Figure 1 (tube, one colour):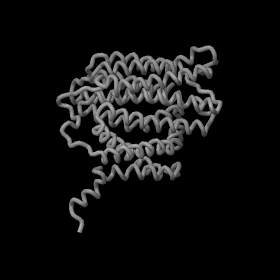
Figure 2: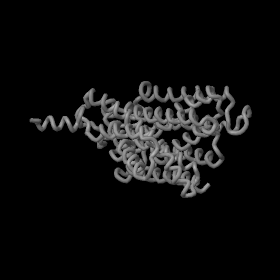
Figure 3: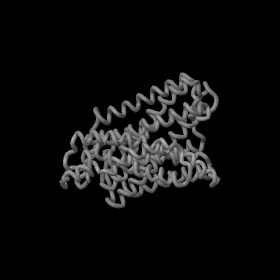
Length: 368
């Protein structure tokens, strides 16, 4: 006869809720089905994608509790970005010259989603519940300074160099920017985790920061880490498999193809977005900002070196320079983020401003 305690262990392997174990496994298995053949298979893949996203958030929370801040947010940001970069590289290897603008489109979409959409939603949701929320300004300011530098070097400066025509870097310039991008991101990680860790931490007396929860066992943390990786793989590649149907829907609606990239980027970044939202609602806006800014930095700092290597090996050209419209929106985003996150306190006002900029980005993509 199975005891109630045994039943509980069967439902919670390694102390994890059963659905968070099953969902990532099913999502990865669904990758093998390839692109959906019809509406029913697309619906099933969409449901599995949503379940994998929520499972990833669940396991990221466990890791954050076990590792402590800022290591927990760093793990999620880096894990998502590494898989996202792998997806970009695989598409580049498959499509060759047709994917020369893929990195640029991914980078601008990721910056707009993380700094405007995720930050905006978190500040709005957190401000509605807690009125004002505080954070450590020094770490946020350092992250924004690094983000501004990387954004200009990778997405704006190519339009103004003369060694290569148009929005391209010459080979030596591309190598230089790739090295600088990796160096800046490595500096950010070192500052966040070792040299200036306290700049990325902020304790709030009434925050729901797991202070009163039981400690996470190492076996549970290890299982959560492995399942987080599985869930993120499922999220990225299910999003890729669903992209043809999304492209078809966008084309049928007469919308620009650039919207497809934004939708896919939003799906890939959804685990970080939900984790940041939960933190903001629990009055831990520092964690939300660490996730958003860290994800934007990781996207540029890891994507540019990776795609530069692929481009050099395959002899491809990378179109990195933004259009004038995107340049204006990127400049506005960086300026407003510097102003809204310069006080050490946030309200719904800053959230609304960032969401308006993101809405403008979406609208001008649909109606260029």
